[in-house]
Length: 279
Image (tube, rainbow, N blue to C red; front, side, top):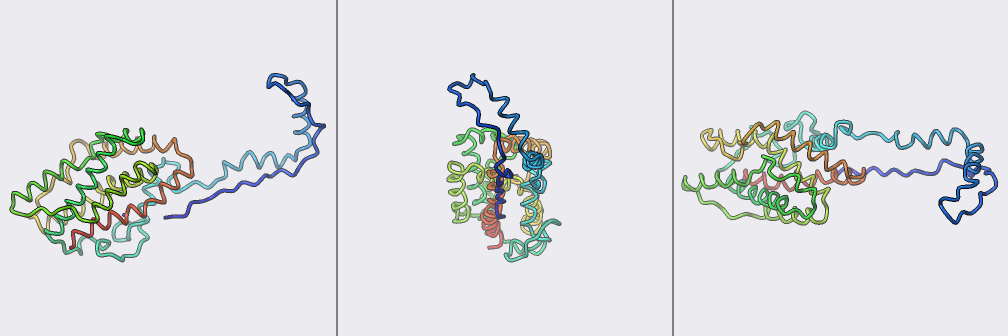
């Protein structure tokens, strides 16, 4: 806040054919005498059906949900399934935690909300620092996307302080998540990109709804900077989608599946921070 990786095992479809006499051994790649004749003999004795099936095996792999539209759509599909039906129409998850209930049923507190904002800032600080000094070159694509939230959170916390509220120290959920992101960014770039996507994109969707409802209940409808962006938000999101798809084009199918499998962990860690609102 893990779907098993599909493993494809391709067995040879060829039963040893009766080949033409073995071609002569070449000492040079350029001495091709006899090679053409040997290939013709192989083609003549190989079952036609085997050749056709072998050529089409790769094309017959079932596509993942959303795959035809790009890898970001695959990530979105997996993320939507991990929502409850109250949260998203594609949701399949049962409500088990307080924060998984519909936002309209929440009973937030100012103290809890401040904890949430502080821990969220720890996570966004970490993400922004990682892309500024990337341990993997591909992360540099995500500098200055317009989705950054650290500066906005700093303004909001300063406003709460001016209202007489005590700003708490970061707590375990935020610190734990931040440390995990640092480790992933070095050792597991596909998993890191999964968290990057889910953190930023979830905030622009469900996060905005949460901010609106909390503002109604606690802040006399004051809109925080955390929920405002400079520029056209849909275009900012599309720009990042394009960058994510570009990075994922360099991945194998196994690496993409590994990224998708990390979604559940992302939801779990984000959910622990979100739960602070209700504390």
